[in-house]
Image (cartoon, rainbow, N blue to C red; front, side, top):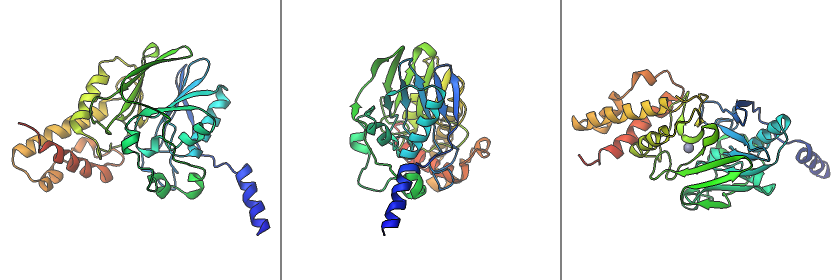
Length: 302
Ligand SMILES: [Zn+2]
């Protein structure tokens, strides 16, 4: 027994679980990590979302802490090798657990974590997280679900180091009940959270197709030249295009189907949206998205 305990102690001292995260510089101030276009599983072990570090000259602001303690620690270590600076603020874009389960790593260092007040209503702390049930126990180890300590209900402008940072709350349900996006005007960079997907089919579960399209139209007016979504690799000024085209085409086709009296089953079978078929996760996500959108749109005022 003593031997086992000694071995366990050694693992906990030296055996930090490393996720193979590769930092990618987008601008002189922004470095991001891009996850696989997949659901969380024991192969990617939670490396299936995007997170970013914004260099404000005196400290980093982190946008989304990632899917686990190990994710947050691995990203932090990779960034410190590039330029050692403390992290002064972590911003959570929304309540889906792949984006904020790394909070515990930062909270333990005394870093302020900020998110929307949606965390008070929609982050269920009493059930196992999706990450807990889908990635390996080693990768999830040390993860303690930790809510943002600062929760805001409306837009805020803050200054950190040499950057003015705008925090915008979407006015209605879009991808989630309350999506928070981060815009840095000086460098025209938008961190859009899961309002923007690329390289895979998005998830409309828990969202609202009309609110999401409205949100993208709002973001599009800001003139961002670098746009980072919550999933997918594209980050140029056209990075919102795929999500916008997918949602608007789906809405048009479903409205037409509803007007023609098609049932939900018929609509799921006919709104196949061929040009998107080659995208990753089409097989697992698309039919569910049509079903979710149909249920919303069938109640629309004509
Ligand atoms: Zn999400």
